[in-house]
Amino acid sequence: MEKKTLIENLARAAYERGSLNGGWLYAEGGEIVSKGVLGFRDPENTQPLTEDSIFQLASVTKQFTAAAVMLAVRQGLFGLDDEITRYFPEIPYPGVTVRHLLSHTSGIPDYFDDADWFMKIWKEEKRVPGNDEILRFLCETKAKPYGAPGEKFEYSNTGYNLLALLVERRSGVPFEDFLRRNIFEPAGMSNTRCCHVRRDGVPFEKYARATVMENGKPVADIDSEEEGDVVAFDGLNGDDYVYTNLFDMLKWDRALREEKVLTLEEQKLMYTAAKLNNGKIAGFDEESGYGFGWCVEHDEKLGLVVSHSGGMPGVATWFGRWIDADRVLIILDSRDPMDYRAFEGYWDGLQAVAADKEPEPVRTIEEIAVQNPDKSKWESWCGKYEHPEDEDFLIDEVWMQEGELWAKAIDDDGDELKFRLYPLSENEFGRKLGMVKIAFGEDGVTVNGGEPCKKL
Image (cartoon, rainbow, N blue to C red; front, side, top):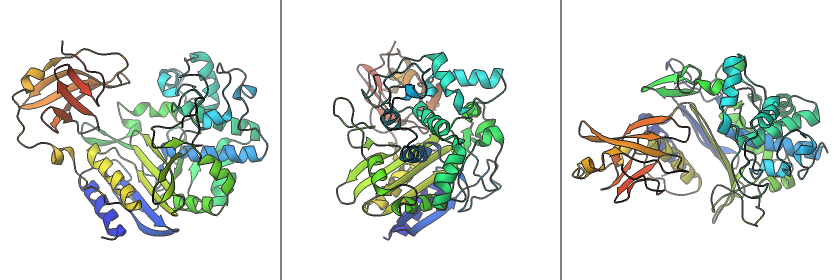
């Protein structure tokens, strides 16, 4: 089956399962193979998406910040191996270089670890902190570093806030304007800008508003009881807050290939996985390293692949480039999915097609769950469970409800989640709005193969 048909079948299957509200574009050699949108720009489902709709990029933004850094280095404004205390002497993290920030090896903690600091300013002072206040944040919180500079890879949005501020201070140009003048305009990305729609209002006519699911209904992120606090972070720069559409991201791919913004030598440096102090590759796992704003992988047949994903409440994005094969895949979504397995199946399927592989079918957890399971042990698993330390997702309680198994969990933010458990095997279960695997055994219950929570 041709790629165009495969991709569109995957998209339709995900949309029909409530797990796609956005657009995709796949191109080879700069020529579009498949593109499209399915869904709506508003929570009320009154404004259908169009192919030129504008989406928030979330962390896909980081590649633009990294590009800005490379341009500033070219201009002699600072060096990759300059220690940032040379420019921000007040921050309590000595030995951290620009290179460390770019590759998430600085050890500087992520601001989401101390999100209450931003929440307090937003709620008590009735304003959204600006990116320049990231220095005040670090000085006041004095959060313990993840490790010494270069010791480990720990993803930190704060590092990219500092990079944006460094470019702004050294260039004397607001970061938003620096991106526009030095990246977006040279690349021909006329529909792209760095801005703050929750703080300042929406400047786009065709903006696809970030939408979350609350009690099974779509709600704008800023109107959500659980996710409305996203407003508190909307003054930051560098880690997020670039808005664009499918076609401008294709222009970005071509601008990179044609050296309209960065030279191939500069890009080569960005696409080289960083190394830790012990010589190991820095990255999310052993298969992929992290360069400057890009995840880096090597496909046996297709060569170098660089990519980045992005996620915020109601936002999910992915941008991947097959450098040697000259392919690009863009996925932009503006609504939380109804079923994460169908959502992941769509994403994985598109990436498989782009890599000349056969995609798996898009299926919900109901479709893969065991039918007519043996429930003889389910009652014995019900009850309260202990909370082991250093676990990000804890099963607190399990119970039967209308003949099905349910659980209450506590996530890494301390929030309580209640959900039905769907049987994937005799003792292994999954949930609809997440990809965790929960298994019951003699030692208790485990999540994703972690430490068991013993029954109390």
